[in-house]
Length: 354
Ligand SMILES: NC(=O)c1ccc[n+]([C@@H]2O[C@H](COP(=O)([O-])OP(=O)(O)OC[C@H]3O[C@@H](n4cnc5c(N)ncnc54)[C@H](O)[C@@H]3O)[C@@H](O)[C@H]2O)c1
Ligand SMILES: [Zn+2]
Image 1: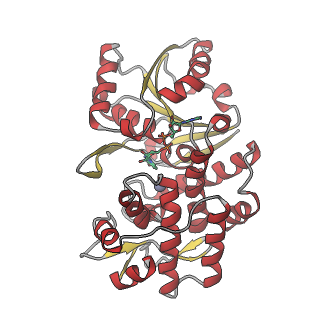
Image 2: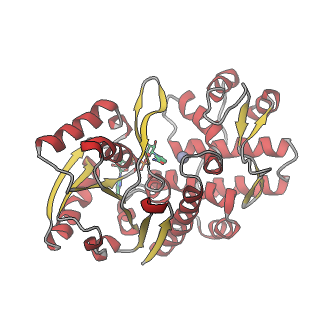
C-alpha cells in the first residue's frame, strides 16, 4: 500500500493505493458513521455488494444507489435526479458520499456532492484505469450540456481517493486501452522512466504492471494539481494530445473513445512539434511506436476545416490563436518563462493534419 498526497492546504488529501486497499483501508480515518455509495449499473453488479459489505463490516450505516452506465448519463437532469434521491432518502451532511466507478460516476456524483446541502463530504473509489490515473485526482467535477464541455461543473476536492487496482481485473480491454493512452501521455510529458517501462511492458495486464503505472501516473497528476489546482498555467500540460483529440472525438460523433482520440491527438500534436523543429524525428517515432504497441490507432482521416473550427474553441486559446502543449523530447515539454502552451500558425496545424 502506498500513499500519494495532493497538497492543497487545508483541502489536502491522500490517494491511498495498492492491491486490496479497499478492503484494508481504515474508513475510520474519515470519521463518519454513514456512507452513501453512488455507482453505475455495471459496477454495482460486479463490485457493489463487495464494497457495501466492507463498510457494513466496519459497523457503518450504508446505502447504495446507481445510475445507468455510460457517458449518456452524465447530464444535468441526472445530477438533479441523484441529488433528489439523496434528499428523498434523507441524506444529511454527516453522511459521506462515495463515488464508486469510472470517470462518469466520479464526475457526476462529485458534482452532486459539491451542491447537495451546500457541499457534502465525499471520497472517490475509482474502478477504471482512466479514473485511477486521471479523473479521480484534482477535484474537477461536472456534467455535459448540449452547449459545450466544461460549462456546468465545480472544482470540489474529495476527502480521500481509494485506488484499488484489484477492481481493474474485471475491466474490458477497450477500457484498459482508454486508460493506457492517458498513461502514455504522462510518460511523454513528464516521465522518461515510465516511458521506458511502458516500452518494455505495455502488453502486460498483471497486478504488478497496473500498480507501477497507476502509482507513477497518479503521482504526476497529484503533483501538477497541487501546484496549479485551477489550471492557470501548469495544469495545461495534462492537456497534451487533447487539443486535436477533442476534435477527433467530436468529428467522429463520439464513436472514437476518449483515450483513442487522445492517442491520435498525441500523434498529430507531436508531429506539429516536430515540424516546428522542437521534437526530434527519433522521439516522434518512439512515441508513435509505443502508441501502436498499446494497440491504439495512430491516424484519423480529418475534415481539416472541421477540425480547425473545433480547435479554435479550445479553452487554452488566446487572441484568436490556437494554443498547443508541445513535447521537446520523451519526458519533457517545451516550457518558457513559466508558460507551457504556445500559439501555432494554422498553416502548420493544417499541414500536420494532412
Ligand atoms: N474530472 C476529471 O478530471 C476527468 C478527467 C478525465 C476524464 N473525465 C471524465 O471521465 C469520463 C470517462 O471515464 P471512464 O473512462 O472511466 O468511463 P466510464 O465511467 O463510463 O467507465 C467506462 C465503462 O467501464 C465500466 N466499468 C467501470 N469500472 C469497471 C470495472 N472495474 N470492471 C468492469 N467495468 C467497469 C463502466 O460501467 C462503463 O461502462 C468522461 O466523462 C470524462 O469526461 C474526467
Ligand atoms: Zn483525457
